[in-house]
Amino acid sequence: MMRSRAWSLAALVGGVGIAMTVPGFLPPLGQSILLGSSIGLIVVGPVRGLAIPKPSMPKQPPEDKLRGLVKARDRERGAQREEILDSFDSLLEKVEDMDDPAVKEKLVRNFDRFVGRLTAHYPEWDAEGRLRTYVLMEKIGNSLSLQNADVYLGLAYQTLVARGAEATEISHETLNGKVRRMYLDPRSEWTRYLAGTLILMNREDEEYAKEMVADAIHLWSDERFDRSLPDFKAVRQLPDSTRREVEDMVEKEMEKARTAGDVGVILRAREIMESIILSRREQPRRDAGPAGSL
Image 1: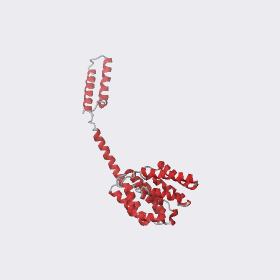
Image 2: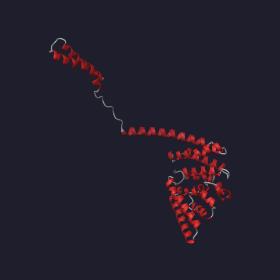
Image 3: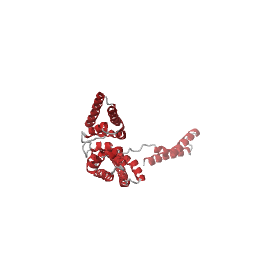
Image 4: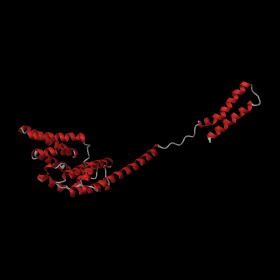
């Protein structure tokens, strides 16, 4: 409406100017100037009309804008959550088929990524997420044996790191006894993730990690110690008070070994300490609070 009015006004003034040049009311020079200006008003007037300020639209209140952004983010987050859960479910279906090398490779390659994504986006799992943790740990417990221990304990260890106290609680019902018996079996000496899995499954027992460290320093063979040394990164996942107790114990073991001149114990204790300390830089700290608070 504003633009059409401006156009009409410019056309009217331009038309009057042209009309005044026709009868010869003005001298030739004046007629030329008036004629040029009038034509310009007729031609340019509409364009100038576009430049007339339009009435400003009412601004959206900041709280309404923020509310809209939150809703959009929640919709995107919900869609992403469903996509992650679907992918996780497809992997769960393959756990029992891990005797197939192709399935095993795919699962091991993808499992940590999906559990990590779920944990990063949803640290507080709802009933759906807790049920998935339970199903997974139950599948691991049903399938675990000395022959496939490396792969299945690797999945258990990843889940215990990612899901914290929630997975620890579930592991007591689904696989704790089986893993404990495996640790006592001499044939498990070459099994990876066994010590780390047991440390995390017993994270609420302040003495358990120290007992495991004492076994590693004094009882394990060299082969078992070298293979299982990375498992002591699990100590970083324990409550801070327990971690400090373990570190203090390792320091005391080194002091006693120096007094006794036991170089082997000194070296083992030092390597365990280094594994724990280095893991602080490598792994994000997980809250090891009560189950359900994750």
